Length: 266
Image (tube, rainbow, N blue to C red):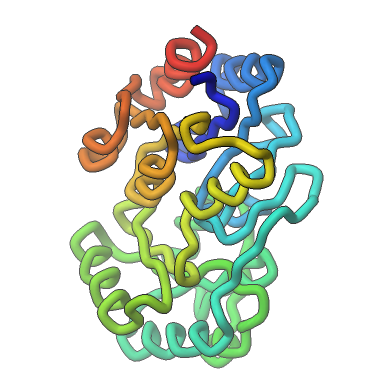
């Protein structure tokens, strides 16, 4: 069955960190659009950090951001939004403060944190955005339109410990996933890139078998498993590679474009 909806992760898939999208990847996307395929990008990034990437692609694609919590076109049309309940935001904030763990809040597509530190500098530099220091009390007051919370740790082992602790404490009230060895990403219950892909498929009248997804990280897994056809980047995690229909080349080698050329455009 032909692909009608193509969903791609951003970082580590179509984009190498701190670079622009390659000409080959942009050309592959344009060819899909010209062929009548609906192309969307799905990311854990906030909308305003993902928008410049969408603009580089040169098409008005629907952008799945915050790991599925917000779907908004490059032109500014909101197609879907799911926020973390206000009381849960406060409880999570208290939980992270008690443990002395760094936390970021994304309220209204803005970035907030208790105090600036090396993690703040790391994140802002990579995402090319600026946030605001508000203290822990300020964080507790930011409960409106919170699409995601994010904690940055010192490394993979600490990330795993935090994710396990959050899941044990909050159970089915939230979704916790890892998009980077240092990132614990928290969304509302049932929110994932997969849930967002299902929303878009329903909007556009596309069957699961007609959906292809490509990604590299653990937060891509629900999306990859939900798609009829899935492609893992060569630089993807072992679990991602073991879960996908195909494995393509690394991001550095334009594995995205290679997959499009081989499995979509043929």
